[in-house]
Length: 151
Image (cartoon, rainbow, N blue to C red; front, side, top):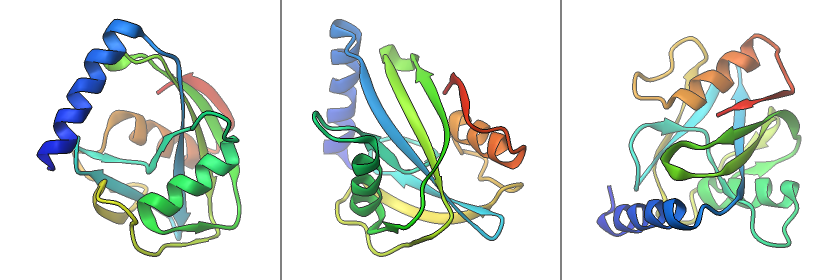
């Protein structure tokens, strides 16, 4: 993992604890042939759905498309709402809008945030996939969308 990004992430945790900002984020579930694309970040452990924060003045759809492009060089042609979730772990006060895309192309990551990415079968996620990711995949498989819940 990148030392610089790990230090910045640790600093962000301190900031979240002190100031408790409300943040809106997006996560993208790229689905193809019974598989989901997961990413491994350079600054935290485990496999995650790709995504990130919504910038001030940015629409959710714009944020989804921007994050997909930045993290994976991806172009998304369809978007479906999976759910909206709260994340209060690590002193966060996040609201995460999770979408599904079944029609997309993957290119090359445009920054150094992503260490690796790969498609995993729904029923064979890696053992270090984060809990929120596992829950979203299970909800998708059970056709339980849209959802409102805890990340």
